[in-house]
Amino acid sequence: MESGCGRGDGRHLAGSTPAEERRRGRGATANPTGRFEAASHEAFADGWDREEELPPLRTEVTMERARSIITRNDSPDIGFDRSINPYRGCEHGCVYCFARPNHAYAGLSPGLDFETKLFAKPDAAALLERELSAPGYRPRTIALGTATDPYQPIERRYRLTRSVLEVLARFRHPVGLVTKSDLVLRDLDVLGPMAGEGLVKVALSITTLDPDLARRMEPRAPRPEKRLAAIRALAAAGVPVMVLVAPLIPGLNDHEIEAVLARAREAGASEAGGVLLRLPHELADLMRDWFAEHYPDRAGRTFSLLNQARGGKVYDAAYGRRFTGTGPYAELLDRRMQAAMTRLGYPADRLRLRADLFRVPVRVGGQYSLF
Image 1: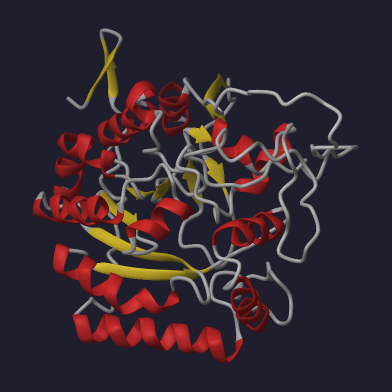
Image 2: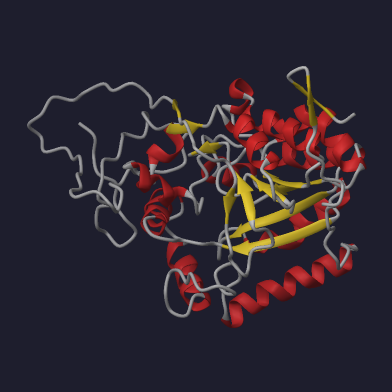
């Protein structure tokens, strides 16, 4: 039988927790019931049932027929008002991912379901062509991969991110990519020419330089050195690169700020940013459970500092505070980031992508043409 996984406060996290061997290579340590479900369940060994040999958790991909592909937002503390996510769920399995709670909307768990039961949008490129061609559309930078990584492993097979980029290139539409995968280099033939016109920049997330910590936090994401190599290759091809030291987890990776910024700058990054750990909804308990298994001696310090930076709560969703936090600890992180960026020569201003080149291609013989 499967046994429940203990939380940091000594209680069980509600939901089935597959045995360690079965979830090898996955980030979450539990699979709690989503917050919208009427009932929760928990597996535990009571000594009566026969032990079962269950197969390892496999990745399942469901095709999702979306009605639109561009998501709009009016958040005052986000630098974009539209985004595209070709996938829901993410096989990288980053335990800290703030998008995990979104899986509850599909009746699935933000835990292991989020990284094993994925959704792909096969009509992404066609929907994008339609939406960009709509009368009255006004171009502004589209953020690609804001919730789940557009270059997660299943992109090798489905190539949805690639198809979206090809549409954006034809329409000469600005796009900002966010990823932690060197698979982005596959698309240099598209990104390079777009960069030459000021239409693209790529943000690479480097949470830690410690390969062991990365393996535990981000089990199926490329290791840190491969991400640094991706920064170097992108910069060499003329693609502007931003390094994201995110999330900053108190007492776990916050001591690496200066080292990550230095290595990324050496590799060619021209911008940098950081985000304090965000733990909305079920994610707080998932992180407690993860700490109980991997770093039980650090959990107390991490959540104490996080509470200090979140006004005494584990999470504060208020605009202007959710990404940075408040108070002495949050201010210290910000000062360290700014001091390191200045010392390392990161430009003070962010690159603004061009929107004035946008054109709706004319269809000729059933195909798009710019001429």
